[in-house]
Image 1 (cartoon, helix red, strand yellow):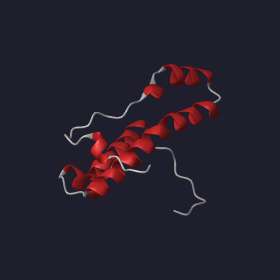
Image 2 (image 1 turned 180 degrees about the vertical axis):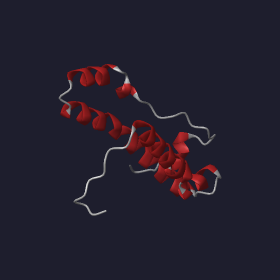
Image 3 (image 1 turned 90 degrees about the vertical axis):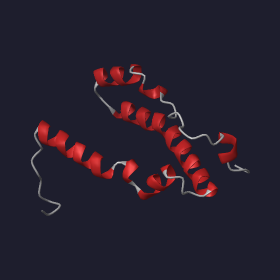
Length: 108
C-alpha cells in the first residue's frame, strides 16, 4: 500500500486485538537489555545509565501530559485529564536490594 492510499479504520475489537498483540511482542520486558538487567548480567555502569535514563524518562511524562491537554479543544477531556491524578505518577518501587546511592553516577 502506498503512502497516498488510506486504510479504513479498524473495528474496536480488531484495534484492541492489534494493541494487545503489539504489547505482547514489543513491550519493554521483551527487550534484550531488559532481560539482561533482570538476570543480573549488566555492569554497574550499564545499570547506572539505565537508572539515569529511567529517571529522565519519568520526569518527561508530566510535560508530555501537559502538552496533550493543552492542545485538546475538548473541555471535558481536559477536565478529566487534569483531575484524574495522571500527573502524579511516581517511579515504580524497585525490586532489587542495590542501594540507590551506589547506582548514582558521580559528577552529575
